[in-house]
Image 1 (cartoon, one colour):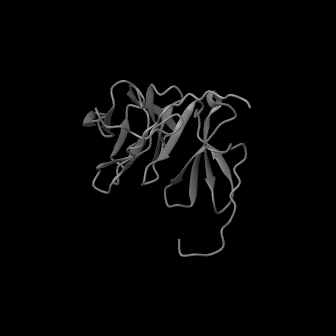
Image 2 (image 1 turned 30 degrees about the vertical axis):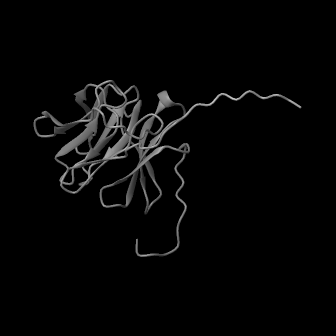
Length: 182
């Protein structure tokens, strides 16, 4: 952040476009690796030692995100039907939410995980409180035209927990051209 010489980071097996996130103090990177979309697994890369460690039982996880306090990881399943929680203290995964999950973000205090419902019919943002796993409605997105990336829409949070979304205000038109060779 203060300048210096950029360094290349190599993560064995990571494909271009893999999900990458900072973890904890910023000395570790969390990477969702994939040989194929169904063979995903989540790895931690220690930037000081260049050692890669895989999270236990992280197969079929997608878009893994590390809590800001560095104690937990959330990931959605590849098919987007669950939001899962990995706790470093126990080295175990548990299901947080069983419903359509697209993008997710941690709250600044690491007490909530915000998530949207992906590309399903009901466009909604929820948050789940970790202490009791209660799911709360944040907002409905009917009539909000979101910009969509491959597989998932992007979502961020402001420091106070307000959702940040990309809005698609462009237009797409389809033309048919008849070509007559001279």
